[in-house]
Length: 460
Image 1: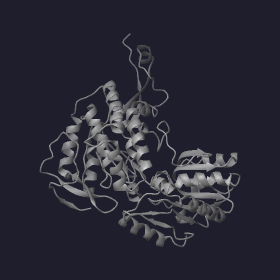
Image 2 (image 1 turned 135 degrees about the vertical axis):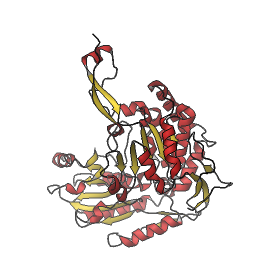
Image 3 (image 1 turned 60 degrees about the horizontal axis):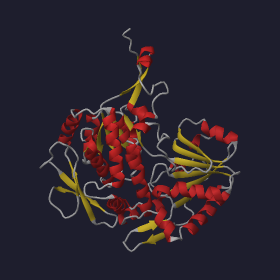
Image 4 (image 1 turned 120 degrees about the vertical axis):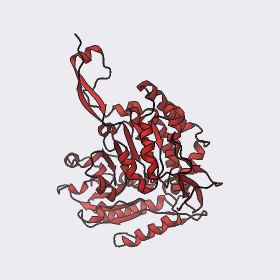
């Protein structure tokens, strides 16, 4: 992916979405598809443009709650079903699949999810309010005194990742809460950001959202220009912003699973398979470690056979395995070599006519819960099996975005439920990739964007 001076091209050009003029100040990067071909040009704006664009956003027209609610509902429907920027939903799915290699079914489900989440952003954002906040501020309620929700700022920055589309189902809630949003799209997959921002703009929210593609050195400029920010990244990102209260970092998920020795093995295989390989194996909610009460090696070898048998079916491979570009495949080979001491056998590779490859998940075994590989998370399907005894300290489960517990042992479930660093806890046949709009992901976004204050009105 190279940076060049702006010029005309036969391939699509993805421009910033902002009312501020951007002529003659931009460069572009070439977005390649998974076969290595030039697929689109993404216009990038220089740092000097960012603060000006954000300041103009702050001055935008104010819309009432009802006006924003109607616009968000319209935008969600347009994103899911309409033609946006000249591209219909099928075009969009093809675009995302082409540049990410994600299974088509994963992208289609995301299209539905993001559309629904945008349409219902008002409903979902209110789920994070304190119980004491009234639904209606009647004169009687105000005179008696109550709680009131207020924003912590006016502008939210979102630094989007490129490993999956699901993050775009969350931030429209900020608009429901009255924020104006500046979105920096991923260079790897800018299509989802562009489609959603364009749909919001066409639905009447041009004064509430802008998309500002910029090089990596412009990210800090966006964060400093906004009041609050949501940033996606790895350990380096977590370390950089961990002491900033105005930045919500969405880092590695390190999602895990616990399998009790009372759980039916076939159900456990299906649960682990869906948790590890679902969503293309690349999401923060995909399981990276499974703790087995009993013989972890025997379970892991049996699971490997289960995966092998299931993925011999081309339809199952199409449903679960992403396509890797040559560059991505070279990176994957490096991981196989780096962790070869933990891997049972070299995973099978399926070569496709396009020149891309699909690969079996990395299935690994650790001897104990304190080995560093237990906390390893890779942006591909990989899982480490680990033996444990439920009488032992369970601190190895933390930190984790999700932990699924497959057992009916009340004492074990209770012990796990008391670990505060587990952000989501699922019991039984619930894969770690399960998500619903009414359930918090990493807490409710309203917890970060708003606070409650006391409120009373009395003119008697």
